[in-house]
Image 1: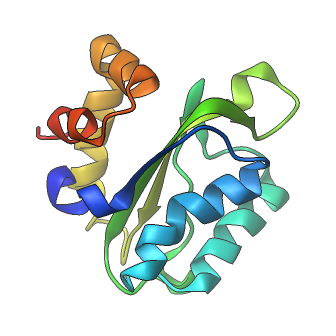
Image 2 (image 1 turned 60 degrees about the vertical axis):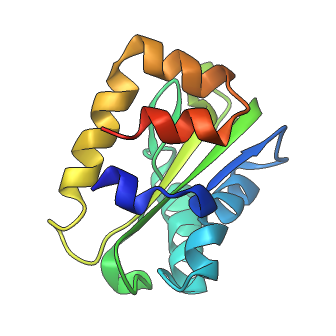
Length: 146
């Protein structure tokens, strides 16, 4: 499931992005481009972080921006943005992020398999280190072939 959602055209590696809002927009752009989400979904993700705080930061260096399906999801999707320089979601050091995985779900269940596989990858210290250091989309694709 993860490898079907996180395809080459949905993976970006960049040097840096100025703000967390820009990071969410850029990370979600492949899903917007292929019609998986509407612009309203991007706005909802940004609004949620402004309203609720950096809850999308699930661990140091890792964020999974998302919102409710009714906020503009057309079909299940996932995209990945890797920033070499961290972007801050708050003043706290633990809210500095280099890996953003945008998740777009159409319901409460359809994305769970891919999310579980992503969790396995991120829980493995070797895989996480590769994600944090690589410039290679090929290497990222190999990691997610679980």
